[in-house]
Image (cartoon, rainbow, N blue to C red):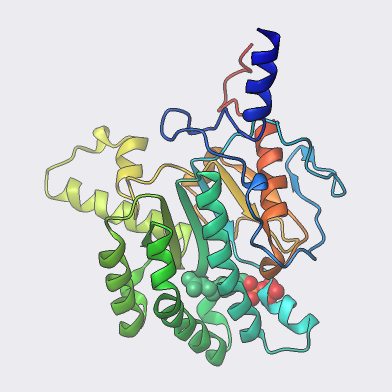
Length: 301
Ligand code: FPP
């Protein structure tokens, strides 16, 4: 009997259990056990969250830790400009490297069984950047979908967009419509690109939508609840993020998912986005696993 138990332990030692999405997806093989695709492992790590300092030098523990996998993870693709200037390159080269790393992130999320990943690609405030940088970013969005469409399809990735999309150039709006329509049947991972996105603007838009319903008589002011409000946001079917990752050494939310992040776990690190790789993600997931998410209640015994 002991022999059989040992054999089973060896066979399943690379298996991770206990995900935050228990019941939604079956447990998955440890990505650490699969081939690591990332080749940019040079970033300095100093992962932190409020009230919890992560040891930057900490190596991932043994392979048998039961990782909790966030259902929805949100990521700032921040630090591209600094990454480029450190190499004597134009800022746009940093955004290009950042776009390539987005593809890498999608692969990693697929392997870990994360169901939704939202990335901050362009904020409502990013129009204040020099015109040539804004133009290069818009071109990069279009190019990304032409370049990676086949791989996104192969990985089963549905692409969605969140933001004030009507304020984008028509060329970008066209690619958004096409990417959403082409990928609508894919189910492995939802990649949500926040573009011309601002948390405050999203809240204002929701308030306008609700006001119109009140004005038309279909909704009474006293019937407005937090749920009504959530349903008026850009992507009402997408669950709130469990984990928000911000690399680049900045410690703020910068108008990203303000309503939805009310109870998200925050993870910060001194790595520039193009350098963010699987070992950083694994550290973030280990830190997330250790967090005690009480949602205002008390710890479960
Ligand atoms: C912030 O870093 C990054 C952005 C405003 C742009 C992010 C966009 C991409 C990575 C392009 C790829 C996106 C898609 C959807 C293909 P920063 O440049 O402000 O960094 P800095 O703080 O070092 O200047």
